[in-house]
Length: 411
Ligand code: ADP
Ligand code: MG
Image (cartoon, rainbow, N blue to C red; front, top):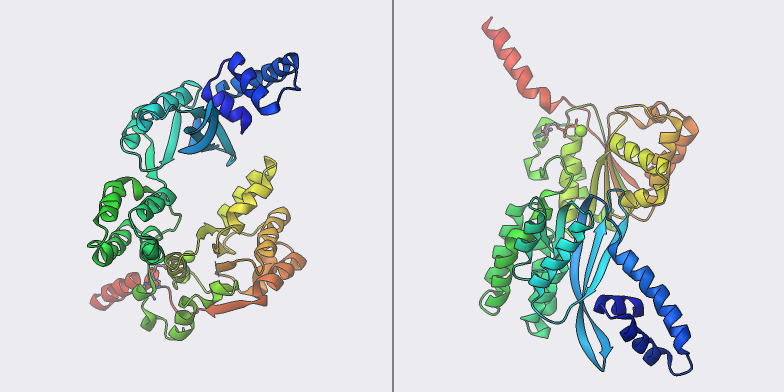
């Protein structure tokens, strides 16, 4: 903190010496101080001016208020820019002290400085709802998607509300920012406005003003679609017991950190149901991650080669619900199967996995290229798992077959 406040304030060496003297007390000699500060300052200046990666997938910018002793102790803004690198590492881009002047203007200087250090593009810029900031961010990086930080939006909402309403407001706002689509978010927001709009019109205005920058993240999930169980025609799969599926939709398996497996041939709606469950979990406030087994294996392999396996594993282990689609479409090599084992065993009793497979569990030995490994995976997976087999006809072929039948009838 000391070094950051000093550098951030842009103090001269002399000022820093005074600052250090004040902090360290009189028994630190002038010479020692100057040696320390020279080292600190050299390092800081170098660090603060170092070249940056050309592309950052995400950058977060925020001002924090810290007490800085400057004669008297005063609250000063310190501007913080954090980014995620292409390899998925978090990186502090820099720290700057503000003088308390207009924030958005100050940010403009900082963002320009970041760009001049080589950060040619930032794909998504996450910031608080500060007026004018989105526009300025897009001046520096014209292609960037500006995303309002949801935490800021909530915090600012509470500012307008009486303390005794905070819990109630949080509860009604939650479905807005955990909605799966923008449309759904709008509906939930309309409900919020109905309930609280009269008492707190300022909160409604706050969200309406931030809406455009609030919604981008809703477009970035990895789900192949947003189908729900209502759209699933159970009459097309008479052998499938709807109660079993609806039971899963209560999400008690997610709460209990257990698993669900959907098995069956192509086209019977395994992915449809898996997505519907994930969407429901997301609405209930769980974090979700959707991936095909092949994508997961490919990403883990690449991370392992780059020496970043632990980090990448986190992507699959952090969410409350991990959907692994299409187990068994491609046989895996032993090393690949081992990576899958790591995910499954680390998820065990810590989170839920929903998986889909066109293979029976008996065939998993072939899928994973190793009976022992397949057994070890199945052992963890199936210990607490709802298994649903759908063995009817392919829905994809339904219309095609009807059309063919019609054609042959005519003929
Ligand atoms: P699978 O993953 O089992 O191969 P999908 O879930 O991808 O199959 O289903 C294929 C397509 O058919 C999807 O568009 C899905 O929404 C639809 N579909 C499958 N089964 C049904 C059903 N019973 N009712 C409505 N749509 C279905
Ligand atoms: Mg599928």
